[in-house]
Image (tube, rainbow, N blue to C red; front, side):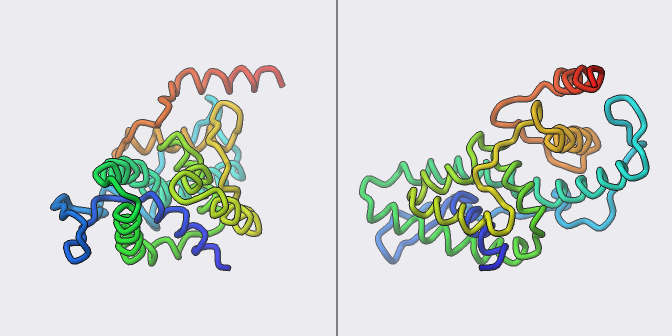
Length: 227
């Protein structure tokens, strides 16, 4: 199984907007289902402009700077998808609530899956293994729920189990949570996001559980001072 199939399967479950199916008796909804990526959404950009790199209020070494820039490129490539996931999860839940029987719900869900497969699969194929793992973290940041739980809730526990098992072969844990106060990489990801929002390169969407960046930075400064 290729990596992109795992990520595509995970995302297409909840990267959802409204769908329509007049032929099969599902009530037509005229709300646009698709999402148009604009120039404000940085995806797979080749050039990243970054101010002088200062983390924890001291200059980074050349190697640290290199790794930080690499992480930033991965975050910029994946964050827009995580943001869309949050928006479309809300739309999916709202759309599913309109139907009273499981048959119509399943039909609606299938329409959404087919549409999103055509809309996003080509882009998601380009994700690297590490980008896929960061995407899982960012989905948790934006939705407040791990990718594994999203699959479990919208499909079944069995599907979630096998998706996580397959992903683990590629070093992708779909149960991974976003923990910027505990995990250094997640703190750096939050730093990248904050800078991206401030510069306008990324469109700001509040995390499911709001993060006070000043407090976050202070907590890492305290950790650094005790070493």
